[in-house]
Amino acid sequence: MTNSKKLFAPNAVFVSDQPKQDLVLKEVYDNLLEQGYVKGNFLSHIVKREHNFPTGLDTSTLGKNIPNIAIPHTEGEFVNTKLIVPISLTTPVVFHNMINPEQPLEVKFLFMLLDNDPDGQAELLASVMDFLADTPANELREVFNFTDPHAIYAFLKQKFEDKEKED
Image (tube, rainbow, N blue to C red; front, top):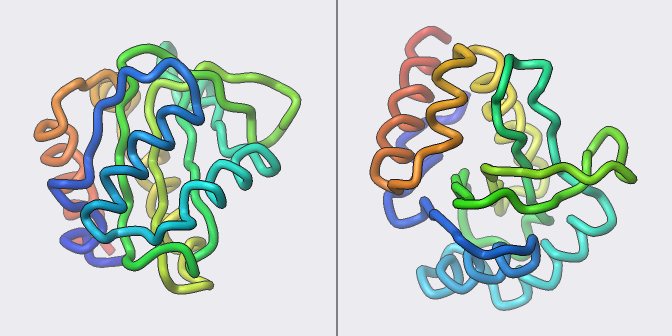
């Protein structure tokens, strides 16, 4: 697994009250661009990719009342770093299911993957999937409803560090 100290950055954890997917992605992009994490053409590519290859994940298989999530990402050429960007949504936003792209899903939390290594996204995605599989349902419910970026950062950093120690 990747070093968790490099997986999350305190200034790249967001809480958004935007009502639509594209607006959430734009709001986060503006912040990421300002901090140098992504390139100027990142937004158009992540929006296009999300429309063509949805990343919504139905979390009902993980436990009762766990909010659905999405894992938006795009090619490494539009990114300057390797990072998982957690985004809590104050109200659910519609994404589409990655398994059944026609199915709309109300999503409450995003793990945006940034990886400037063309082959690296699989590793970040595996880290997120391991986190989902290994974290008790009550803790997933809790973190996916957090509205404090500092609490989100501290929780995820701790969980990913604990996982690293086990590996």
